[in-house]
Amino acid sequence: MKFFVDTADIEAIRELNALGMVDGVTTNPSLILKSGRDILEVTKEICDLVDGPVSAEVIALSAEEMISEGRRLAEIAENIVVKVPLTWDGLKACAVLTGEGRMVNVTLCFSANQALLAAKAGATFISPFIGRLDDLNLDGMELIHDIRTIYDNYGYETQILAASIRSANHMSEAAKIGADVATAPPAVIKAMANHVLTDKGLDAFVKDAQKAGIKIV
Image (cartoon, rainbow, N blue to C red; front, side):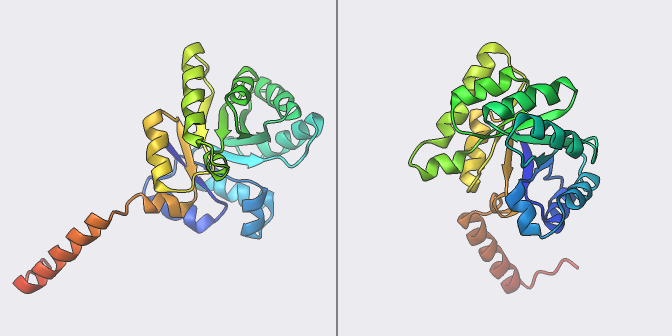
């Protein structure tokens, strides 16, 4: 499963990228606002930093305006993925932009029917939001499973990009189901390394090494 990092924080991306933990980046207006920077400027810097796909989201609501914004965003770099919402206008924009040879990420997906429409419209990625479904006491992972089944049934090439990841457990569950990609905040990706038994074992090793006077360098 590919790891995309869900942030516009350049230093966080740089750290994870140096470890080979970044296959791509996703951003949205909320993350751009948090960064406090101009969308075109910060997106260009991210594209220069990573080799993989970088999702940059349109802010328009009509298909015509989404297409115009998508074309502008795509000019930033070759690895830009135009991010559009899963609305009827978003699907129209997806079809046009895909037809022009651009990568498109259809976001805010909350049902298998929506995912099926996105695949029919030629989406490069579909972004089902796991955490937001869980917030409503619905099973976000069940949606990933349903989309995987449908896409496999008919050979759709649209990649499932598990989004709204809230925990390290979400990451492993998405991987087991067969999501192509998971996008998560830097803190969640780092949390995947944590385990109480690792901490406990390491503490014991350190104490024993000190008692034995072990020195390596």
